[in-house]
Image 1 (tube, rainbow, N blue to C red):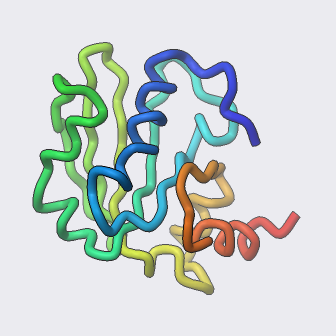
Image 2: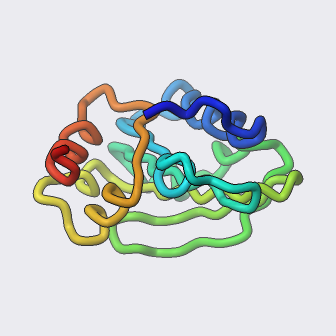
Length: 143
């Protein structure tokens, strides 16, 4: 699946996400999920990311890394989805970025129903050196 032809601001967010492993040690996977991953994003669609880390608490406790999505991005929400903790940001251009942070166990097999639903709904891998997302996708979407 290609992510060509994205709006510039969405492309900026994905480029920033790809930099995260260089800035924060222990990041083991990054994927865009949802509408942009399935090439159905619209001007009012947010960007949904899943970031897997060896120590997710480091990312959740120290929010300084969130500035990679824009120095003026504002944290506007936090939600707990069990294994995944969401941080919602709003950029000055009104684009919202949902960053779901989880440990590698989020991608464990067999996946729980929530993880499987996210993967079935659309996933595009940005960083996966250990193959965590690749194996999860293979199991959930074998076609």
